[in-house]
Image (cartoon, rainbow, N blue to C red):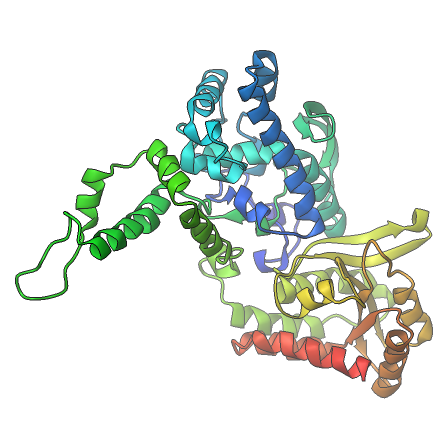
Length: 476
């Protein structure tokens, strides 16, 4: 039973910001600390605070041999069953890290040369250098460390999509300010009698980005191959038929067998190799809809959204339906640049409210420019959804611009069904820009259909071009 099926949301994975898990079995995906580390949006920065504060406290406790603190720090490393992610077969069985294994990990960290020399500086690298740390254990640990933000994220997603929640006791979460684990309650959905903690799809991977076997086989051994060839070392073989000399990985493996101690020693001598490896893995980016759903056809789905949009009548009676539908379309079109949508976000002590606001997580293209451009500095993208077919007048535009601010940025959209006078609406948006208040873009049904058709035609790059063009019209 998937979360969307239980709550009858009628939304596909591509319209959701979180992983739509099946509560009857684990989904083979992992929360990846490196996927969090390389992101610099406000939500990810908060997650990093939890991870870094714990890891630094753990390393300091190991170096000072503070046994009491070590026992406390490693007391909540069991498998987080509420996410339904990982490697369990069938019903999740609570693998996690038991007390005995926690002690083994502490011992491994204490004896690790990577820790002793200061080579190991972040949690994501522990799988590379520390015995006893595997992908699933590291994913479980990361989940526990960011449980607090995930509790809030889950409540926000439920409010966004109208999923019922219940206030229940939750396992202890890490408090990065007090540097300790704390129990508490959270408002989360209950699906088929099971607590569910929703996880953003932007921070999960099919396997962790930093993988010791991959690093050894595809990076260190290839580095050693090149060294052997350049120095004409003892492992260079000359082929009888006159082809170029070769160095075989099997020979290198015999001379340099795999161990995490070897990886740590090698990286200490050649620090550039891990930096190159991390850059390559960081460029992989979030999972695509196709990777999360093998049978997903983006082109067909985009066309279906065009048809579904036409079926929603304009007017106040269908305002909520339109807003919910637009949230899915916006996620589908703009993910992974825009993430973590929230509905009806209170502002100014509740006097102003936003229809939808997304975290601007973009690392390139139009939304990245909006995040870094001094005029907008858009840490978030604000959307006002107006389910009517009439002109967007000054009050609507002023309403949106009035919600801009230093903490959010000065950038947002109004979505509506149609415009009687597009030129007048454009002029009003230009006035906002000329007064230095920020940038307002308007997306009509026609614009949305154009963007969806671009996706259907496998021309997603047209989305960025369209947004850049619309922005330029407001700045000239």
